[in-house]
Image 1: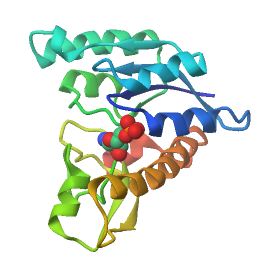
Image 2: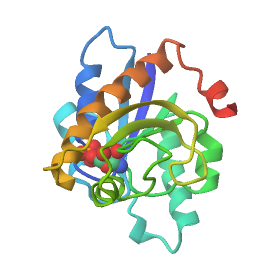
Image 3: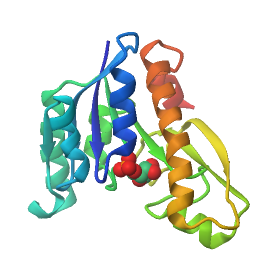
Length: 197
Ligand code: GRF
């Protein structure tokens, strides 16, 4: 049973999809704790699904390093097999990536390396591209720059707004995330190998 800690910053709709998948006894992974860098709406999922949560608010620390050290202290308690960033809007400091990597994955609402960063969907709409995508990557020290585990193209419709496009992307992200966690749990995906690629 792969034990996951999931980090969020927002609504946690992708997290909810993972929690629902994990309700199936056949699914070889379970979320043991949910963490956030702020008072994220998605922390309420902890209450709903009976899973411990922790909040390490970025604003409570003098700098990224101190925040990262406190975040790592909270994650370490759960001894996760895999750290999943799902709508986590902070860059993890090097020390955190070094400690938990390569067992750290992230979902991103674009076809990386296209549109990295915090405004991927808005950037795709603004660029007027005919298609974008969703990606699951191994987290490294960069901004959405780690090895790509899986990604899928998603059309951008002329009528799309950032919101309609992001909703369509999230549906794909959730499927890719659930599949990737399954693949890591059953050994189909080897994160050590992937991170050496
Ligand atoms: C997802 O598209 C994620 O890839 C991006 O922010 C969104 C989070 O959505 N970083 P939610 O919080 O899971 O609803």
